[in-house]
Length: 315
Ligand code: FDA
Picture 1 (spheres, protein in one colour):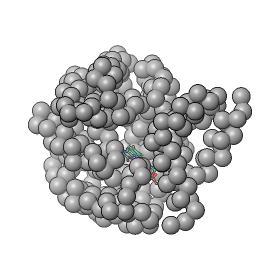
Picture 2 (cartoon, rainbow, N blue to C red):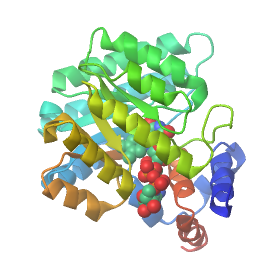
Picture 3 (spheres, helix red, strand yellow):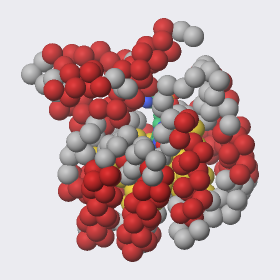
Picture 4 (spheres, rainbow, N blue to C red):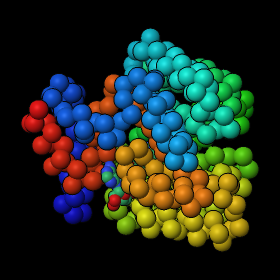
């Protein structure tokens, strides 16, 4: 494990600390830091960022920031924000044919509520799916830490009975993921493959970056060979290249898979890929609860930390 792995681990630990969260959120964080990765606080901000992306031929998936909600009312408010967002996207003609979809974290719509969490999250996610269907688009369920993987995949299965287009996210850093890819590589299945962004123990996840990359390639091979719709979520140029080579090897048409990146990361490369006729979808987070999301982004690139710390002290 090298110094950057250690720093990444420390930052991911911070993302879970309430004390640090309160201190950072209250600090005069320069808007530039948050603005780089987050579209803004309101539905209108998400819609206008998406319109900009569409103007450069990029697709979008919008995430309302927030996680680990333990209050039923808050979970219902998040559900309603997604429904309002889908209506606003329809109004702006941005949702049709899946041009803009939504990404939902189950812990933001109730999964973490004691006892009935799974049922509450399923009901709320179902309401979001109904709104998405009306808008002519899809929903993908984000994947959170490994303690939620089975429950999240169970919810994907339950939703797919009524909404067969619901997508799942799988994380290549988990030992189990290659097997999950085999289970989910069937016809009609939409799978977003990412490396994984949480601090996970050795018992369940590869710790070394090179091992995660190798796992990512094994998972890509399964998904690209399958009959589903792979969504390749990475900024790693080597993995993007391998994904495109595998798609070619399996005679996949350009509309039978897509590449995905996060808002604010490798923006020029996103445009370049879209310009070359590939499907490039950008993950667009919006909302007030940006702390956990932002710290995970900083952990991915320790060089960003200096920039972030400077912004905490400058006004
Ligand atoms: P890696 O971190 O190795 O980065 C490769 C290169 O990309 C870096 O060398 C750098 O050039 C650039 N880069 C990456 N991150 C950067 C940053 N923050 N700032 C600047 N440059 C950066 N995770 C999860 O656990 N659950 C989920 O549901 C999702 N959902 C999701 C959706 C989409 C569309 C994407 C793209 C990613 C996710 N993730 C996720 C996050 C994912 O697991 C992972 O943490 C990040 O994508 C970073 O990993 P890369 O594959 O980009 O490789």
